[in-house]
Image (tube, rainbow over all chains, first blue to last red; front, side, top):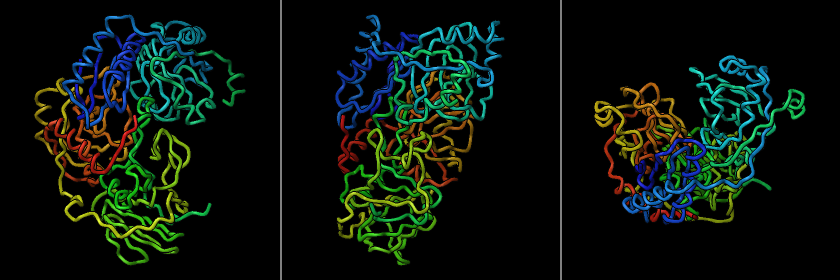
Amino acid sequence: MITFPGPVSALVTLPVAPDRDGIARVLDLERFAREALPDLRATIPAFNRLLVEGSPHSWDATDVESRLAAGAEACLAEAPGVDAGEPVSLPVCYDPELAPDLEAVAANAGVGVAEVARLHSGTTYAVLATGFAPGFAYMGDVDARIAMPRLTTPRPRVETGSVGIADRRTGIYPAAGPGGWRLIGRVPAAFFADAAERIARFRPGGSVEFRPIDRDEYEAAGG
Amino acid sequence: MSPHGVVDRPGPFCTIQDLGRRSGRRAGLAPGGAMDQRAYLWANRLLGNDPAAAALEITLGGFALRFAVETAVALTGADCAATLDGVETGAWRTVRARPGQVLRLGYSATGMRAFVAFPGGLDVPAAFGSASAVVRDGWPGLLGRPLGAGEPLRWRESERTCPVRRVPRGLVPPNPASLTLPLIVGYEWAEFSNADRERVFAAEWTVDPASDRTAGRLAGPALSSGPRVLDSTPLVDGTVQVTGDGLPLVFMRDRPTIGGYAKLGSVDPIALDAFAQARPGTPIRFTRADPDALRRALARRERFFGIRHEP
């Protein structure tokens, strides 16, 4: 489906699930759009959607719609592109003292805390979208056994580096602030100290791995 | 390096702004940029600057700047009864200053934001192609915080003099008592109830005092909160989102790049300038926009101010 949310923008929603496969197809469509449409000023891929923003001097909604429709059809007809990039690897300390929802997630899954850590760190995740805050990535898919909906009432303060779960998605808070995801671990805050590094770490379609670390290693990294 | 001027008083909230950053949107960076782009663009045009030169955005006035060099500055936006060494200067014009003179802005009587531009633009660092401060994004230095008292400023062409220039009277935007915002319907518009869709164009809201650089919030009748949105969706400038309380908000320059609530569409990007100057309590209505007319107006503005976009 293609809609026009602004005077020089088009939003394509692909009829696919908003998962690893979905974002890969969206990135295929983004590459196509960058080739096929003149004067694009920005593209934003997120989940199963792509926003393209053009120039007011050359934007022709009818032409954009027909090109994007053809591009979407081509992207859906083929296997999605493979992301060849190196995975981003981050250390996570799964410790109830650092992660206020870890025990609740374990109880909900009927397993121990160590098993939650094993299941969460045993998956290579795909970045499905970035946004919400600079350096925040929505990643999936979390193992169904430890998936849990977000809190009904968000916490007023979540610490920097907190690793959260919301349904089948996981993410890391790059800065302290309010948040409603279930917190199951913590990445040392030193990984978020540099603004440019924090912002550039994740890109849509990229892979992310979590490496479990114990409390000593967490503290040695500056906590 | 010695400063060309020092901010004696920054007022309630004074930041460095330009036309904002586009390339960072894909990485989740707020666009940032001058809230009232028309006023900002006129300030640079009066000095013959690049249209994207970094300038000061001064919220509500209460500002004072002491010059250390002979120079000219341009003053536009909200009327803050500006004075130079106590002599009224007026606004929407260039002002020449000598070393030791002080430019003062009172608290604005109408409008929300004044702009001061400098020859060649402020000499400040940029990130992702823009010097715009976005406090929410946590950038270091002046990219991430408002100016403080005693802040030293340097501009790029301190030697450049400039004749006195004024914006032609007919082109100075008025301060209307109420605003009608052209709305391009889109996003989840079709999923709102008929009653809600009728209400959007029939109701009157007012600007809520909780409005800021991220969003202009509206107070007034609530919509029935709209359809449930499963995944955050990429946003355009001026997206109108309906949060859980049923009240619309209009996303402004420091907005996020994706949003998870139901959305009605987006406001004419050019109308955001007047909206940025609307004080709390200003009545707001929506009218249905013709997207192609808005596109043509955007193209005219870019040509008039000489705005270029590198690919």
